[in-house]
Image (cartoon, rainbow, N blue to C red; front, side):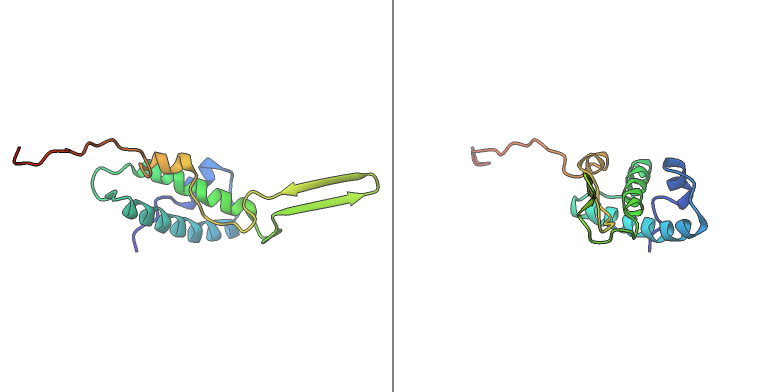
Amino acid sequence: MADPFASPDDLAKRWRPLTDAEKTTAEVLLEDASIEVRAALKRAGIDTTDDFDTDAAKVVVCGMVKRSMIAGDTAAGVTTAQETTGPFSRSFTYANPTGDLYMTKRERQMLGIGLQTVFTVPMESADG
């Protein structure tokens, strides 16, 4: 397996200090996110061995893991919650209730995935 694009220290620099238990979780999630990024790059035909921007991949992977870790275990599977006490009520809608690893549109653009390209198709034959 290839090395992850980011380390728990990279994640901590972009988010907050991590506990020892969070660092262990982050290591696994950073590996998983890196695998997902490499798979998406491969599907897009982008070669990571040549002149690839690993700094952009580091930022993307850290963002993916941060979103996953923010979700935590407290509301696994819950998309909306509502609490009512007397005349007061409040409701919550969780952005990522299951803690999935995913890339945003902006992150995909940073990696060069899904960018629009322009090309032309000649309408006459090569024989002239």
